[in-house]
Every structure is written in C-alpha cells, then in structure tokens.
Image (tube, rainbow, N blue to C red; front, side, top):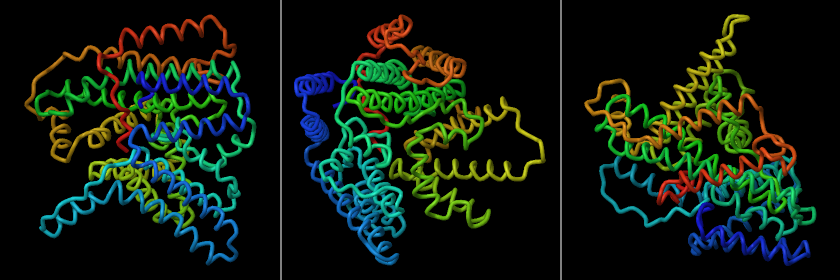
Length: 465
C-alpha cells in the first residue's frame, strides 16, 4: 500500500477509527502493532516471517550482549549479532550481484538465484545493527519488553523506507501512554499533506522528463540532457522528502516523533554540508556505526581518508547491487576527501565565496546523480558525453510539467531560506488555526487534485533500495 494510494487512505482511516473507539492505551499499542504487520504483509506476506526473525534476532542478542561479562565475550556476541543482520541483507540484496560478477570474472555461465528483494530490508537491518551496537557501547540499555521491541521494529510509517529510527530516540517514546491529541493530529496531517504534494505534484511531474531522457540519452541534445539531470535531481529529492514527510506526519497523528530526514540539501555550500542535509538519518548512521567503527579521524590523515572513501563506497552499494552505485559512492567519497584536505590546508583566513561554494557543490551533486540514475556504465557515458555537447541527439522541449515543477521547487528553496526552519509545523506557523496556514493547506490539496499526473501513483524511488 502506497501512502498516496486509496487503499492506504482506507487502511489508515479504519485504523484511526479503531483507535478513537478504543481508549485503553495498551490496547491502542497492540492495535498499531497488528496494523503494522498487516501493512507489511499487504506488500508480500511471505516476507513477514523475515521481519519477525530479524526482530527476534536483535531482541535476543540485545539481552545477551547486555548480560555478557568480559570484552572478548561481548565482542563475540556483537560480531554474531551484526553478522546475522548483514547476512540477511547480503543474501537478499547482493547474492545475485556477487554471482553475476563471479561468472564474469571466471568466464563461466551459471543461473542466478530466484530472489525477490523484501521491501524495507535495507532499513530494518540497519536499524537492527544500530540497536545491538548501541547496547554493546552501553549508550542504550537493552529492551526487555518483547512487545515494545517488536513495535519499534515494525512501526509501519518508517518500516519500508525510513527515516532510519534509532532506539535511543524512539524507544523512550514507547514508555509513555499512547496519546492522540487534536494539535498533534492537525500537525501530522500538515506534514502528510506537504509530503503528498512533494510526491504527487513535484516528483511525479519531474519523473515524466527524467524517466524518458534517462531511458534513451542518445536521442537528446545537451540542453535537453541538462533538463533531464535537473529533473532527476528534483525528482529524487521531492520523492524521498515526500515519503519522509508523510511518514513523519502519520507518526505525529499517533503521537510519535520521527527524526527529520532532509533540510534543503540543494542549498549546501560544501559536500560535507550536503551530507548534513541529505538523508540525514542514513548520513548519521554511516558516520556513527561505520566511519567511527573504522577509526574515524583518530588514526591520522591517511587513515581518515581511507575511512571516508570506504564509508561512501559502502553507502553507495547500500543503495543497490550495481557498480553504478559504487561509482556514485566513490565520487562522493573522493570529493569529501578533497573538501576535508582543502579545509585543513587552505591559506589562513581564506574562504571560498559562499556563492561559488554553492555552485560547485550543486554542480557536482547533480552530475553525480547521472551514474546513480543511469541503468549501466554505457548509459552513464552516453549521458555525460551528451551533457558536454559531444552527443548527436535533438532538442525536445516537450516537458513543460518538469520545467514548472523545477520552478516551484526553486521557489520552495528560496522561501525556506528566507522564512527559516519550521518549528511547530512545516511552514513555521505556530497556531494550528492560523488563517494563512489553513490557506496553504487548501492550496496544497488543490494542487494535488489539479497537477498530479494521471496514473502518477508510482512507487517511491527508495522502495528499490
């Protein structure tokens, strides 16, 4: 069930009606837990046992690690706990990738495994790793209530595509009574509507141009290819931002708070600033559980640069079993190394002008999206040659919806920077009945009705990761 589908609207309306009718806090808790499993089973019920197995695995190892005495025993248990999570991820997501490359290296022929990628596996395995590592580091006590832990693992708004929720920021919320209040419900629907607008009006219109241009880049000339690059940059942002905002909104309606996942990444003035704004929960996960575990910046500059490139290579591969994703991670890792080297060794008092820093960062980010989106290396090469004016395609200015969506997205960025970060609601209004706020909500709903493309109820981009 997509958040933007009629099925989901009916599902969530029924859930809210049941929660409104049932007053007991613990009963509401169980109702949402059951609804979360039904939500996941609606995608493919065969993988519900996998979700349960990963949940029980991390719950059990959390207790074992907490009770273990001595560093050797604790290291053994944490190694087994992490290996179980990563083993499930490697099998379902990368087994065929490794087999395909093995056949290519050895020159042999062999059939691939009939594996269907379970939805959300990248997210709920990373969540499991963060939990057992937090228990190992003594930064979070193990949870002894199995039902609470199952709720933490299966909570449906964030289950499929994040944000990646950590135990210290979510489990404490499960200790208090289940609460649904009018201000939280209103705020939650604001977030949800903002996310729906971002997905249906912006992302899906940008996809019209991006999908067509990336499918056959050799057909188009440089200006059209640049439009396709910008369209995809806007599409992936609006698509994933939209999902995150809808997940946050659904959680707020039920009284829970999920972390913000984006803070206008395309206004970043350096690549490090970009990663502090883009997919923030993944960025923090990679920093805290991979980069720091590799040694971070504690072992000298050379090791720091190695850790940076390894972190981004793995981060790229996390997005999918493709060498294009590895290339994307390598590009971001290399530029982070250059950024760090420049920051440490630039002349005293010399700073890159903010406008130039933004332009260089934005240009790199949108160009790096090309291998991320392209289906293979030859398509990437064709696209980049065309961007440089070395292609032989023709101009196609038939993508007016994409151009309009880019203009709206640009206005959104400028407005955000001028108004400032939201506090209590998406647009910064503090009183839930503020007339301007209600006007914006109505305009958002009208925009969805008028400008969502027909048949635009497509899956979110990050479902494939």
